[in-house]
Length: 95
Image (cartoon, rainbow, N blue to C red; front, side, top):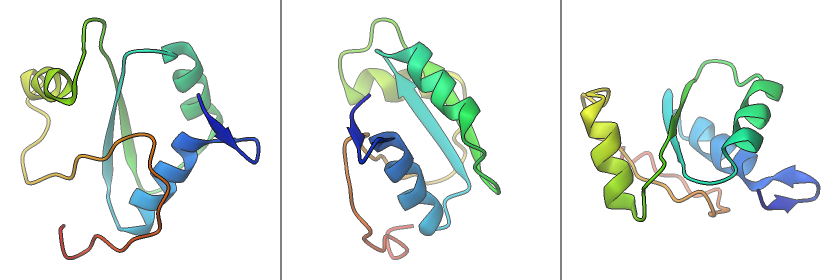
């Protein structure tokens, strides 16, 4: 997991989503799954549900979305965010 100032980039992505009032996050992982699981256990993000979806044979966003779709967990519109973004953009209009 890539770190910035000794903080995993995933933290910044989650904080960005929390700032935009997202209440559920699905994190699809294909690599570094143990590190990501450990990271998520070590941080206590309040007011948000985070689900880790471990994918073994995913090669694209499409593969990840198909796997999450089979779980039938997403019932409304959603935002797809890459795990390598760093932004503080307001996405409330899109939500």
